[in-house]
Length: 224
Ligand code: SF4
Ligand code: SF4
Image 1: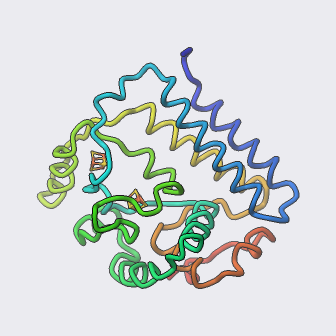
Image 2: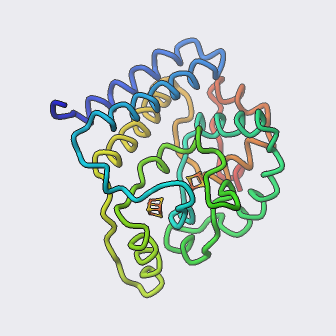
């Protein structure tokens, strides 16, 4: 594979989002486009020559699912649709409980609370895996122990490095930024929000998808 231009990739993503948002009558084309780019990213990862055989991430490995995760509104809509399809709206109680404990916490404070994501199931798997946030996809490590050590070292005020797959990280972060930029250019709210707070809110306000398409922007008061 030739060298990959992440900035150009981000720009292409943004342009494609602007294109599908032109009509702004339904969320469906945006969701289709998001799915397309998520699948495209998986293909690019397979083609990239960087060694992925060392990546330790896999089912049941979930020490990292205690961090703040930022998501975009279309990601939130996709998660809510998925939960409804699976008839799992009861996760709202877990989100409510989690959000009460983590809202307003910065990244370090969130780690101290040690509360797992509301979507983590009892076997340590992501229960919204097909629509999991782009920034969750960006996180990798060559060793699950080093993830735990790095997270624990935060309690001692230390910083321990975790070896990540840099191309994967750059690719999903570029995808996230490209989508955000495309939404803002289209006059839609492309800002990021905390995963638990946003999904909790969207489960309560089923009209918000339409309001968002009309250019309505969330306020922190809505979320909190
Ligand atoms: S980043 Fe670390 S804790 Fe998270 S899935 Fe990968 S190895 Fe496991
Ligand atoms: S959405 Fe899934 S992958 Fe992301 S933090 Fe939650 S359980 Fe982990």
